[in-house]
Image (cartoon, rainbow, N blue to C red):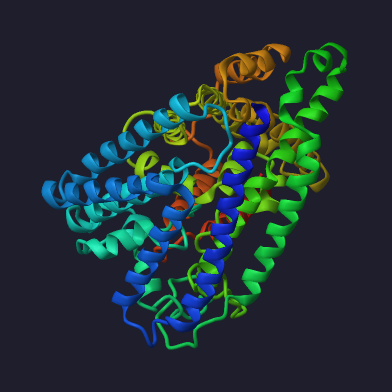
Amino acid sequence: MLGVVRLKILAKLVNFVVCQLFALLAAIWFRTYLRSSKTSSFIRHVVATLLGLYLALFCFGWYALHFLVQSGISYCIMIIIGVENMHKYCFVFALGYLTVCQITRVYIFDYGQYSADFSGPMMIITQKITSLAYEIHDGMFRKDEELTSSQRGLAVRRMPSLLEYLSYNCNFMGILAGPLCSYRDYITFIEGRAHHRAPPGASGKEDMPCERAEPSPNVAVIQKLLVCGLSLFFHLTISKTLPVEYNIDEHFQATASWPTKVVYLYVSLLAARPKYYFAWTLADAINNAAGFGFRGYDENGTARWDLISNLRIQQIEMSTSFKMFLDNWNIQTALWLKRVCYERASLSPTIQTFILSAIWHGVYPGYYLTFLTGMVMTMAARAMRSNFRHYFIKPPQLKLLYDVLTWIVTQIAISYTVVPFVLLSVNPSFMFYSSWYYCLHIAGILVLLLPVKKTQRGKTPHENVQLSRSKQCDERENSLGQNSFSTTNNVCNQNQEIASRHSSLKQ
């Protein structure tokens, strides 16, 4: 029986990979023969939508009808309700419909099976439906002065047609594995306006439109396919020999020393990540191959193809804080959570954001344990950073020691937090946490009980400078109506370092 289940899972995964490889070939054909310069936007929308629905039908059968039902009803809600309140109704309906489908799949069909199921693409479509609803609400109902700079950049000023809506939700480039993109970026790509951006000037101001030849994504696609190949190799070899489930093996728990448990926890979760690297990087390569994902030019005039990239592997593996890890892991989902929840929540935005993330991910109990733990870890890490980091800025040797220690703590904390996400069920998750005596939960709660330095008022001049720099960084994010996290974070870090040095000199 177990062998039959594994064969079914393998068949679904092979089916998924084959469909993505077909999408890659279709993307190359789309960019070559249906260029925006010689093909109308209408034709590009039609072809992108039909190919997407064909792939969905091939991969998921008649379950793919859920994609049309969810999108169709959401579009009707937008038209009938109007721009004042339709974002709320679309949010509730899309998330509710997704949850019902997840409950059906998990508790009726294949609980605990890591299969390519239809609820995965629905998670991306849910993000697109809710994002677009808020963007239309911002662009057609709210006043410009009420919006942040990023909201103004993403605001949609007219109601999309049904074809544009279906094309955005169900195009062949992102229907199987995403990633999420903004509606304005997608329409800009379809209409062929994405490459008309000049390199940013020395002032870092918004790129101005200009006539430039369409850049080639070939180098970016090849690089990402190489990453996919390496990730798949590691997943098929190393990942299988280091299962996360071994952390709760009775013999291992009884005989292994604490250093061994810590090392195996980190290594087993490290080995579990390549499958995500493979899926997300392949999805990014498919979009790039179609000509989508161009984010302008850097200061050297080199084309950047990371507009909708979903992860930064180097930053993930070298994270020295919980926030740094989350900012570079599943980037587009993090941006979605920020835009539809964190920025708009009036009460406890961090808690609301983690709750929404747990609901969106699914109905496995392990997801909720992970996000509840992550909530504690995030707030504790923030408190520790506020209280102690400024003591370790200088000299450089002390800063290096701080970075090494925070890297070790962050990697262990991340691994500890996400074990239930992999184990899924309640009993195995509690078995793992009890074997660790809930030590990081207790440590996180104790940290939260400590007094934390004020972050808004009563600050020293040094702290005020850092706060103003941080606010500037938040305002500059997506100043082009695009995902510019990497550039923005680098500028923020540099500004904060300058502020720290300035303060130290004064002292």
